[in-house]
Image (cartoon, rainbow, N blue to C red; front, side):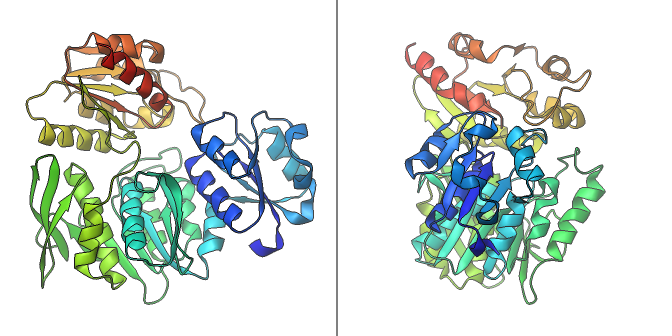
Amino acid sequence: MLSKYQNIYFLGIGGIGMSSLAQYFVNEKKNVGGYDKVESKITQNLEEINVDINYEDNITNIPVKFFNRDKTLVIFTPAIPKLNKQFVHFKLNNFKILKRSEILGLISKNKFCIAIAGTHGKTTTSSILSHILFDNNIKFTSFIGGISENYNTNFIQNGNEIILVEADEFDRSFLTLNPNIACITSIDLDHLDIYENEIQLKNSFIDFTKRIKKDGILLVNENVSITGITFGFENYSNYYISDYKIINNVSTFNINSKEHVFEVNFDMPGKHNALNALAAFVVGLKLKIQPEKIISSILTFKGVKRRFSFISKYPKIIIDDYAHHPIEIKAIRESIRDLYPNKKVTAVFQPHLYSRTKDLMDEFASSLSDFDEVILTDIYPAREKPIKNVNSNILLSKINNINKHLTDKSNLSSHLSRSDSEVLVIMGAGDISNEVEKIKKTIEQL
């Protein structure tokens, strides 16, 4: 079906998931263009490979070639407003319009597909696995939800025998996939704007597992109550981690199966990241890659941008992370405690979505209370409109910490320059990352 279209137009092309698809279609020799409301490093990189991007929602900005209905496929992200003028134009003129998730389903349909699902851990696990595959010369294409530090991209292509995708539970997007190997890293309450409760969320994951191809493989975190090959920290799992410790800022641990024990060194801190490495390790085994080669690849994995990324180590340690869920914030705190048990830590957090903040308000307050100092910014709305009585002030009032503040993003640098904390961690899935370089420059001038 995709072969009939020569022109591919993206609405929301600057998104991390959309931009990897755009790169794929460039490699497929298609004419690729799109709209996004803001210019970014991602869109600039796409423009460098001749992707035609416009930044103002106006029909006149659409390049002429994309007005050919028979030759143009339109791909959109749910973040695009339904009243977007370009979206309305394509809809009224009966263009073929598909969601990003539907495109991934079509691309992977007749290929050997590996799908990494889970509320947390998808991107890091997919990135580690992509590095393992590339390092071992496996012919694959991967679509990652973050920028791999090893390859400085979210799209890696070394052939097309295997398609590796992140299976996103948001909007039930992963139900377009039919994987040969599926992995569920976690199921924690989230996206209550889509799912009314935890039962609905879990049922969606169960529906996802039913889409695994005949004779396919399902790997599940030991804490997920779905039958599959298990991995985790408990010795009843099929594959489990033992003897986890940090030595000279490097995670070291053993991976155990019924027959073997493998010693692993991994340059990312945190037990949650060790679990991500374990999941990627097991998938590698199922692909018949020798365990010693997998371990060697894990050692040379450099990480993912905005996943516990070290921005600076002097005069203060500055860490940037995508964490936007209470479980993720807790994991970040534990990782910092493992690395720097005696250092004072300030957390800067930009809540992401009014709905998530409302639904998990108490959990956010609890996870943030464990830092030495907490600084909140206003909620990043993304696709949402404000919800009455849901704001950062209310969240701040629930945080059990006398050293807490609410500030505008523009004041973060000056505020942090006065902090006596030795470690600063900036967290959130919105635009808070845009402030990180400013913070770094201010701190380095101290």
